[in-house]
Image (cartoon, rainbow, N blue to C red; front, top):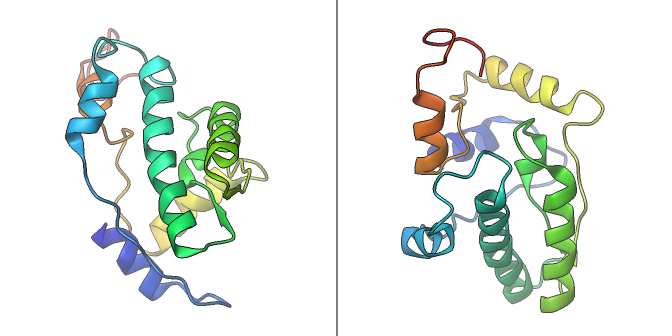
Length: 149
């Protein structure tokens, strides 16, 4: 969160950008992940997590009267933009707040994100953020530590 805020403060924008930190509710995550602990990245556990996180985001957007809600997750090659957009649309219809479809990987978006990270000396973690993804990422590769997955 601090890294994101630091970037927002440093990056020149045409319009003001504000950061709203969400609540970290690990109990809700563990409840939706129960039984899915060994699912691979982009699997059913991730889909449930997307729903949980996007639903929270949509609720904040609705409460604050925002025009849209969306996610930056679509920039990651490890995330399924189509699934994220399908879930966002469904939540949008359920809660009555507009979803902004995205695939930030397109048009070299991921490459640009890595360039900006280097330019602004930003930390980039190599896992999604959940303990299961972290543990999977830190396992030694069959080809040796740090080899291709």
